[in-house]
Length: 545
Image (cartoon, rainbow, N blue to C red):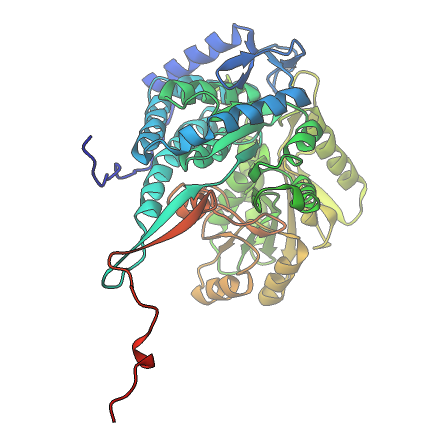
């Protein structure tokens, strides 16, 4: 068989479709939405080559229309978790032994399937089950997952090409081996792309995966699984199951072949997982890789030199796109006193123009929060803010869950920069603003750095370059993704690799080569062509005097 050094296609970010009135893509997506809404589907587990049904059905409904039924999924037990692990381990050697260019080809095909025949289905599934509007679904469940797959293949080829130097008579090589065991992928509800990337990035590097998505993302997760299988991912390489978190943890973190976790979710859950792994460390064949992107309390700070309209738009988009349910969403803002009156008026004007309702109506900017638990949590914060004397709600505050989990875009202005909605993660359409004295910019920056345990995203808006330099310096550890004169959301694969530190995670940067390096274990190989045949070194020879 002929072989070669293979060059993968140069990745390019997937163009974002507009879904503007009169476009063909708008009509096609609307038709797909109608089709999916008209059906009730039954979603099995995918364990090895089997579609497994437990008989314990759980209803799936749109968050914006919780009386409607999209389908049901089969809940998993501990036994299903064990079966998924066994299925993964059964194919581990075969999958890791597949030539890397064929693994690359499989995931490049998956990208093309999503870009083409599966685009509308995946977008529509995300819109219905996660309550994303058409644009938010497009940049997520189409473009970002396509980008993850294409760029990760490219990064994989770069990793494999990184080789050590060799001395005369010696050939040094580096093998980038997959981990010895299985990877546990635990994925969130809010980004279909993240749900697809966490298992696929590990599998791409030759690993086998047990994948547990959020219960509120299963509807689109099964579309991703359909794509992976159609692209040629062998059965058992990625196993999709739906157990409770405690049931999964009890099995996964006790298994000797547990090799790593790829996680996106809450800080508290991640910390508990880390503890479990540490407590069980003697049971594992190797030290597990722990990779996690967790919470955020993302900030926007404006300098007195900032353009007011730019700040207002950064706030309205950064805080309220996808109902603030982005890891990167602006949740706290620091606005100088000289600009606040103008920014306040502009922001309220923007918010008043935002329509709220179901995703099927393309005129709605705001949709529902993900579920009743989230709704109740957010409502409790808003209710408390309505009672507290040190804060004022200047817009929104309305909450209604009669037909969908709707929370109005809400802006709280506080006199206390350490008020709880300035410090605690809310994960919803609630923005808290602190108006600082315009001459206390540097002190405010220091306060921002110390206010929250998180360090995911943040942005500085200013025309004064010195103010930008100062913010970049004092906030260097406050955000893993830092934006200058922009909102603090919208990271693009290959352009702004995503991740934060402190309480926000391990900062292993999804959308970069850094992340893929976590899923391989290098082996250094030294080959000597003419080995020594005498133990004696020249210095041992007798000198001729």
